[in-house]
Image (cartoon, rainbow over all chains, first blue to last red; front, side, top):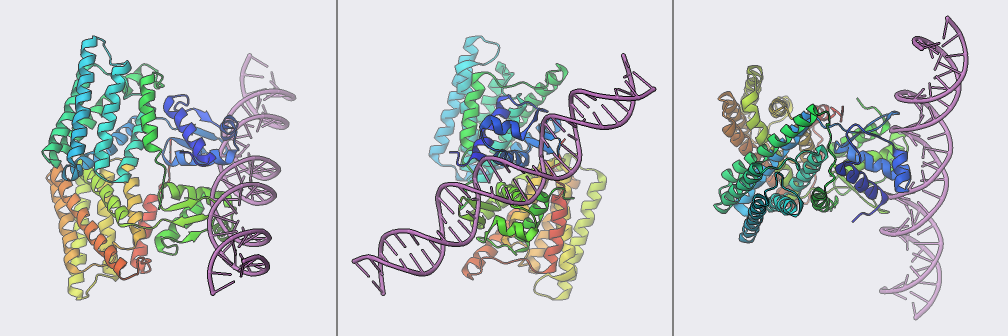
Length: 258
Length: 258
DNA sequence: GTCTTGACTCTGGTATACAAGAATTTATAA
DNA sequence: TTATAAATTCTTGTATACCAGAGTCAAGAC
């Protein structure tokens, strides 16, 4: 998986970013990280440079390396990328998707509905634990399968980057009352039904609607956090770790060129 | 503009890539470039690393650094990114565009039409010279203005990267007979008219159609080049250099983080 | 003539030394 | 006590030295 030390450093830093051990605005130091990873500054520098290109870190010469602050504008931009790309992917997928892939999407919808039902019957205020894990992993897998179907590797890379971006905000996986959960399932199902009818325009429409919904939830969460003076929430419950692992695995199909 | 040596190296390498001095498959060497730029390997390495993330170069440990080979699949993927993002940008732009921006788009359409007319009257088989320059610069400015209107900096960055990608293929700016030129103008005009009507769906539709057209032309050119055994055409006429300069200026709004 | 083998060269990966500016701390003066 | 200035520490930027693996080529064995 990880070839050279620079890749190792990249993975470890990114993991710390997503897990919340490194928070927005934090000042980090090349030498500190180097010591921590037991390597020299050189590979750490390369990893930082890469994360800088991806917008997660930024460096000020002779001052330090900092974790980028999430901003409302950036949150919106990230979700808009998802709308544009995943919407187009759904449009394209409609004309090329196989019966097998459709069946798989159907299964994922069923799993999500089952998780939603179990949640309702659990009488909990927020979805959590094993039920949440089932829901989120099927949610993610649904999106990934559509991206894969669209047969554009850059779509997948782009979206996985955006997902990590929003993970870093620490918002979108929290705040899951039943109505929101139900609506997520419903919109997934509408995308699925549109794909079954090979109706690309509607598939795109429902996909965009779904992602716009998620954006609204994330923005509301963001605004609330700003007011609460607790602008950043590390992901410390194990559910999110599971999703994080899935994400990492998907992204870690490293830059394999010809 | 360019702060440290690593940025300088980045610009110079990228310029060589776009101008065709470095061709697909070429093997380059960190030390050679370092000598050429009169700097050490370190900043050159950072520049290469960045170009690698962007997919323009790739490195094989202990073997060498190579210029990525353009492939048909990658050409398609790049144009699909443009369809997805520029299409969405047009959709969003329709609801937020100002009257001033609309007037500017109108002027750009007029300029393109005038260039097309001058081309027709010149009786040349292919557009070239000052007329081509006018046409291309208004073409590019039209797309950029819509992206800017959509107010998503990542859209702009993404598309400028894609433009450079296709520039490297050395295809899309050649092969410009009158019918194709006319159609480019026509579709720009339709996008413009849809934006004037605030009809986002149609603006997106015509934008997608336009980019799909361009993709077809580029693919045809690519296939022909493959048959001719001349898979790569450096950009050596000064028109393309003009557009290159515009692109570089637009992209070189460097990664300014908070 | 063909194949094998070994030396040699070239490559990128890594560690480290130093430079120069930013940030912080300490010392000094009022 | 406060304000200013000097010294120190810490940061990234750059250059360089060394390493190990890949590729090349020529000498030798058959």
